[in-house]
Length: 592
Image 1 (cartoon, helix red, strand yellow):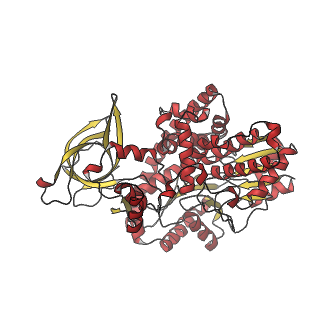
Image 2 (image 1 turned 90 degrees about the vertical axis):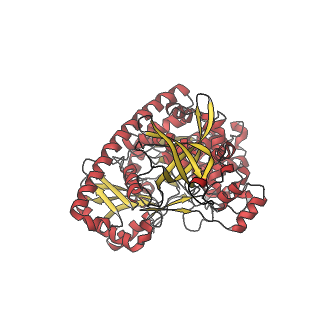
Image 3 (image 1 turned 30 degrees about the vertical axis):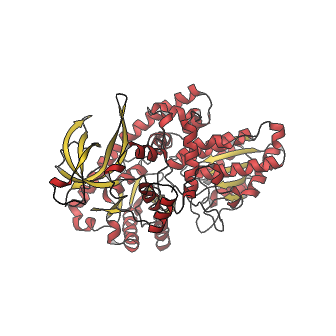
C-alpha cells in the first residue's frame, strides 16, 4: 500500500526565502528541501567547501608531489561502477597533466570481486610493478589487501567515501570524509568527488613548489567537472549543497560543448543533445551505459572511453557500451520475470508468512551477478521492502547485492547480522541504501532467516508503507512554461528530489501512443470549490502516462511533474503522471 503526503516546511524559512525574491512556489519547494537561505542555492565554485577540511589531504598531496618529483610509478585501482570509472578517469587525466607516471587497474568483478583484495594487489605487483597504489571509490575496508601491498613493498593511498569498518587499513594515507575524526561536512560526496578534491590539494602543493614553471600553464581543474558530475549523479549519492555545486558546474560545461570526448560520445549513442543535458541524462542514460561495462564485461572499456581525447575512438567505445547496455536490459528483463515467478511460487506455499515479511532475499543459480543490483532495486520498488538478490560466485559462494528503503540502513543491518552470527557473512560493504556481500551457498536459508529477524528489529509496520511525497497542489496560474524551464535548469536528485505535485483531474480524453503510453487531456479541479461541475478549471493540460495502455477512469487523483514537450518544432507544457489512483480510493501501486 502507498500513501501520498505533502512535504512540510518551516513557515519562517518560507517567509525568508520569499523575502529574498523567490516566488511563493519556489520558496515552498526549497524550504521543504531544507534550504534555509538563498545563499545555499549558490552554485559557483567559490562556494565549494575548502579541500583543507578533508582529513589528511594536505599530507597526502605532499606525498604525491614527492612521488611525482621522484618519478615514482603510480597505479590507480578503481571500482567497476560509474563512480569508480569517473574517479579513475579524473585521477588519470589530472595526474598526467601534473607530469606523473600513472596507469590504472580495475578489478574484473567476476574474478576478483570488490576492492583492493590481496589478489588484486598481487596482480598489480606482477603486471604493473607500481611504487604507489591509489584506490578510488574503494579501499576503506581493504585491511588484508593493504597489508599485502605493504608486505610486497608498495605504498597505498586510499581515497574512498564508503563507511569504514571497525578497523582501518594500515595505508600510508587515507582521504575519506567518513573516516573517524574527519571534519569535512559533505559526508555524501562521491568517490569521484574525493579524488577531485585530492587533485585540488595536489595542485596547490605543486603550485607552492613552483612545479608549474617547468610544466607550463597551470591546469584548470574545473575542466574535469563533467566527469565529477557524471560520477556523482550515477552513484546516487545525496545531493547536498556541495554536491549540487559540483554537478551544476559539470552540467554547465557539458551544455556549452566542453564535455570530454567520452561523455559527448555517450550522449550521441543515447540520442541526447548536449545543450539540454540534465541530471536525468547523467543518471538514466550515461550512467547505465557506463555501468554496463562493469556489469557484463570489463570496466576498463568504460574508463578508456572517458580518458581518451580522440572523438572517433570514444565514439567506437560508446557504441560497444551501448550494445552492452542493451544486453544488460535483456538479461535484467529475463531475471526480473524469473524473480517475480519465484516470489509468486513462494507466496502460494507461504502466503501469510511472506505477506508479513519485512524483507526479501532471493537466489537463483542461473542469475547473472552483474545485474543483481538492478534487480534488487526493481523488486524493492515494487514491494517496498529491503531486498537482497544473490547469484552464483566462485567455490561454493554466492554474491548478494541489496537495496533498501528509508529507515533501514542496509550496511548497518548486515553488520548486525555479522555480529550476531559471525559464521554467516564472508565479507560485506556498502552504505545505507545499497550494499554487497558474499556468503556460502549452503548458508542462504539461514541468512534469509537472520536478515528477516534484523529487519523486524529495525523496521516498524509503518515503514513498510510506501510514502509518495509531493510539493502539494499548484495554482492554475503557476502551471506555466516559465516555471518548468526554471526547474529544468536546476540540479535535482537523491536527497534533493525533483519537484512533483498532486491534484485531482477530469480525464477529458485519452489515446494510446507508441503502443504502450497514454496521451491525455486533463482538466484540473479546484479543490477549494464545492460540487464537481463547479470545480472544473477553465484550463486543460496535455498529459502523458508512460507504460500504461489501459483506460483511466473519468476522475483521478494524480502525482505529476511539469515537463516540456517538443514536437514538430513546437514547445508546449505537459503533465507527466508518475502515480494515479481512483478518487477516494487507495493509491494504485501499479501506476508509473
